[in-house]
Image (cartoon, rainbow, N blue to C red):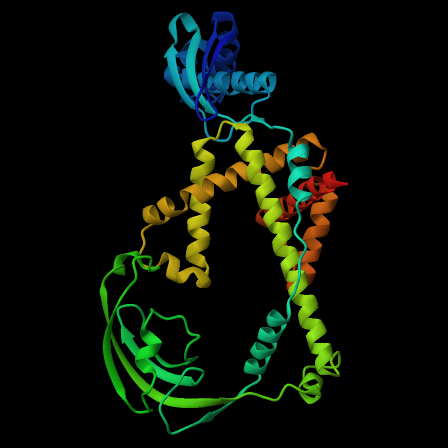
Length: 409
């Protein structure tokens, strides 16, 4: 077997392979014997008909196609093993010659990309050494205490105009959304800019009609810069009565709280942990970004396309992202998400390569333990390839980033 290899952009390979008559004859004979054994002629049991008669009944074109398919499959397996290729898409095959019972074909292959990393340990050490100290100030604690009081507030119906901080119950009709009996706090609902101001200073029972211009960065691209008409009925106005911040409130939160100081300490610890997590995520993202920028990676289009398809599917199935996908076609979503998909693929390739080089690839036992943890957390048995792949990725990411963080020491 002779072959020539030409590398193409995007982690593709153009391959030309030729098998001479002797090499291809092996595949032909196998395909011919299989076809011959399947010939059925009237008056003869299978396999007992005279060879000349059976030969005339054999479809020689089908024999050639079967032999060629087997020859291509076998030769590609051998070449992929020799060159350490992993195919990531179906090879595109074109038979270019079949003269004199020989075979020549051309194949275009998409293979797992080569990843040439820079000194990722040096980059990690520099970035993680710049970790910022996390500090929780008094204002953050005070704001959290106010939120806590608000979450425990009693609401009382009042016969007066609505003001900021009140809870209102409204019916709404518009091109953006429609609902009945929706309750929200004036000043905190995050509707279209100017919407809540239109409700202020009005009483229960009033019907309001007004128009607002959608901002240029509005989530629904089709409504950006356009006038949107609203019809609102103000059903009720409620005044919020916030509880006193005292030990009684603390004790009502559960057995772990006795005093207001217990609440403050819990809030401070929670805010500190949240900030530390954000700082760790920031440093991890920066490290990965710097390694990606400095490395050489032939990024296959098929990887980006598959990632995009998965992202679009996830967006459509996630209720929290309903506003992001509303009114957009799949192509519009893909255009919006393409750069993110590209970065996701690059990040995954870099993480995989580091895991491979540093012997950090997850073991079967580690993945199975992660699946058991997911099952216990969800209260149901979790298995299947999708969950296995997810758990594998979670463990791989964790091991790689913990390794990178350790470079500071």
